[in-house]
Length: 222
Image 1: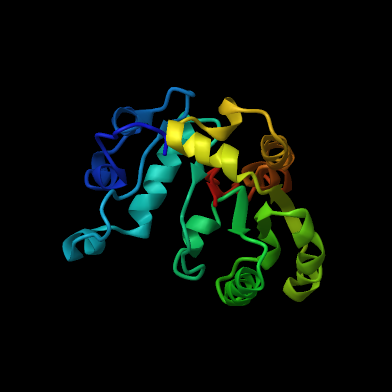
Image 2: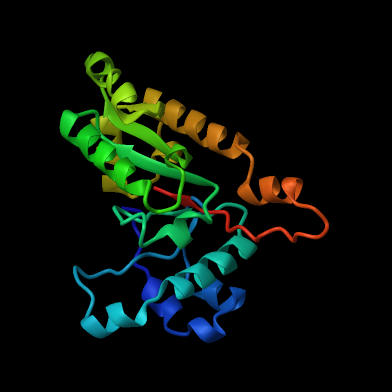
């Protein structure tokens, strides 16, 4: 969707995990014309068994730590993962976003997911819910779901199928290709996320001289 053909993927960064450094990681990134640097995920539908077995959470954390040392902002799209299994990754994030459409089915899945989060050691309040493809007619049906989830929605992004389709077709990020209500909401969402305190700043502020602060990886999971 970004109109490029990457030479390397996340798997390439994980293979030399023991010798991976910032310079090597940077050489594996693909630069998009808008300026973002991307390390794409696995390009094929399924990984081989030996590939799955060779990937560890510790290796992924190493890649994140290096990325956060090289960039001001790191965004990670984890897709739909088990919160308990990925807890060590999720806990490093400054912001955790759960994205869903405004349907009863999607909200029901969110409720089940947040219920499972309680056993992962991560406070469910850290997961901020973003409703996308929202229509004005969706506002009323979705509103009661705030109470069902015991959590308010962080943002509602309006539906703009035409502009999004054009952005995908042209391989140009939406925020650089047009001006619309959706782009305005996206910018507001980004501004609110950036205004939130970083977890490492919070830890540093609350730590004493005898208790060293825990390093935090600045990453956003979508």
